[in-house]
Image 1 (cartoon, rainbow, N blue to C red):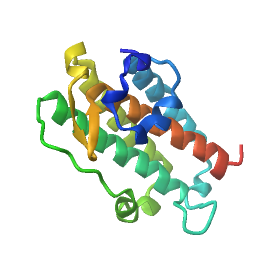
Image 2: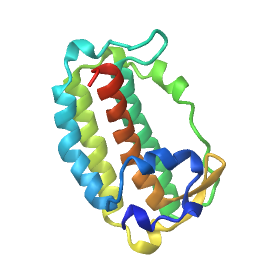
Image 3: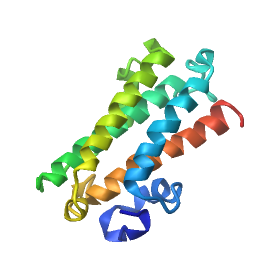
Image 4: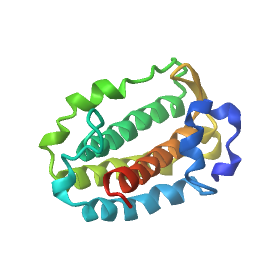
Length: 173
């Protein structure tokens, strides 16, 4: 499925920036492509920057990376619930509660890369066995509509968004 096939009724407008950052991509292709290139990007980051925050009160680089992992896991879970036909409204999550409890400051670059690969492979496995009807399953997530396909694209767009933030704010590129 291509991102241009998503209908605006499949996601809340809050998530539009995460979709816009991707351009016209196919879901499975972008999931696999990011598995190939994001670990390389992470490996290129100077480990001494992992404790760096570009402004007092903002997350450290390590916290941003663990946030990306946490968010992918949460969106995987949401997709699983919807693809299995569970119509129970799913709540949002408080990222500002997760980050201080993430233990990101104790993590090594290697451990974050290894965990990313495991999490993304799990996402790919989850989405690889879906048919077009399953991708269109819609439920209520964070008080708005959300399709399984939209969740997959948002996982990718969220990662790309934070990659862009890292390049700009943490690395000054």
